[in-house]
Length: 253
Ligand SMILES: Nc1nc2c(ncn2[C@@H]2O[C@H](COP(=O)(O)OP(=O)(O)OP(=O)(O)O)[C@@H](O)[C@H]2O)c(=O)[nH]1
Ligand SMILES: [Mg+2]
Ligand SMILES: [Zn+2]
Ligand SMILES: [Zn+2]
Image 1: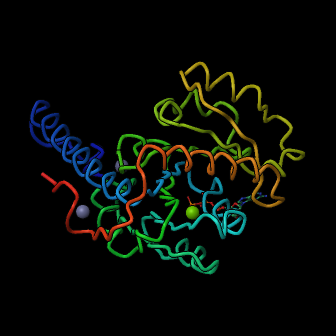
Image 2 (image 1 turned 45 degrees about the vertical axis):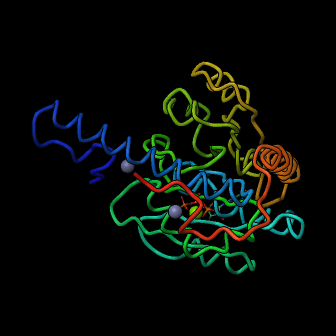
């Protein structure tokens, strides 16, 4: 059970439970702000990838890594309950990757990301992808210090998902429809319906349909990333001086 997202918080009075959860979220927000300082001090753009399990997060990263190199240096934090599988897949492409295994927790939190930073060459990264635990529910509630949320929806999942999982789609800065190479086999999936569903829940963000398998539209997503990185750099000029992980950044309260 996931204590932090509330599904295990059944003991004590309702008021006590609410207070515990509020404290947890406030602490997470403080750590996330601290993590964001680390990113900004190095001009790193951090992207939080969220989707249900198997939507194609790792495959997409594998497919774009070469397209972004060499001008954009990428690193990846992988979140799963168990296994090093996804980090191993990323490392095969010569990219630094840290695997977080959460055990029973169904989302990443800011403290996990902060710990993972110790194992990454933060001064040598342009874009850090944080692949969240496959889950369309509570990952949206936990700020990780990222600058943008990208939510994936594969064509096999159905076109009504924004209506059903509004919180995560509302938090998105971009929605990627993945596995479009399968569309000829799933005629009932209607891209226009996803868009209507997204607008209904208040997600006024770009939607891009692509395939990691055929590489269709991958360049468009790479261009979005390049443009986000350029804008980000303007707001936090990369520091030339050494900035280790233990100082120069507000302490975690
Ligand atoms: N046909 C097709 N299959 C894909 C595509 N992208 C991923 N897949 C397949 O979908 C399955 C899951 O892909 P992953 O990349 O592991 O998905 P994920 O979202 O990282 O999964 P978790 O980390 O477990 O949540 C694998 O069998 C992939 O080969 C795609 O563009 N087209
Ligand atoms: Mg994965
Ligand atoms: Zn959770
Ligand atoms: Zn720190």
